[in-house]
Length: 369
Image (spheres, rainbow, N blue to C red):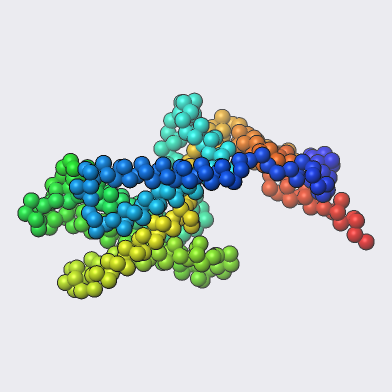
């Protein structure tokens, strides 16, 4: 049971200038912006160099795909910039370091050699944590996830000139797939493998459309989802995915059934939607795609703590809260931020609410007449 003095201290207002009002010792915003900008420039420059070298000094680079390539350079800059800003915050920085430390720990590998591949498969690949919330949401997210992964694996190498398809006769049906100028395999465009090779983006679109449509429908119909949603943050990404997928399918439809009718307009619309989405990724909801892999290290950090039976119990009800190292990490983050109530990390959520309510009744409400 907590001492009364702790609850009292949590409820009483603090005088200005006290420990809780002291600004956290953090890097200045200018230095963070400078480091983030330098990181963005460096990553963008490396990508440009990789495009030049990977396309064999631009010999395999398709100039018609230049807008897409430029958009990926902006994407690289934005991701590096925002990622640097993100991990500059005390809480994210501490979790980031602990995650990487757990990821490269030989001791963790020795104790749980299968933990990392299992977490990559379940946490990143199949996202089982979403299934606990809703099977429909999990299925829709899986459709979007695997559709986007397939589209990225095809689009980015093609855009950068790393991936080429060549035909000795100029019009097929025999083609060679080359990566960085080296022949990987030959195939006939008229057989099943050839059809899959040339329609990979169509398959990705067919996966993405129902998944994105479900979330868009849910955003419009579900009262809980609609309550706190923002158009630019929650709806624009879904609309962008649907527009990209639909225009991509229409390009195929135009070339096969309309003999190229309307192809130019559809190609421009498709290009604009793709370029917009690529530039939007670092600064919108899609940024969680970049953040999610970093969470694997943190999950490993918590998992190995449980493996060693380092479970921390609530000081009041003695119910397990989380692993001991994780609770200590949370306390360290609070100390970094100078929040001055890091001891509250030792209580479960229910006991925190009880203690806050008790302190309010004992030390605040009694002052009202």
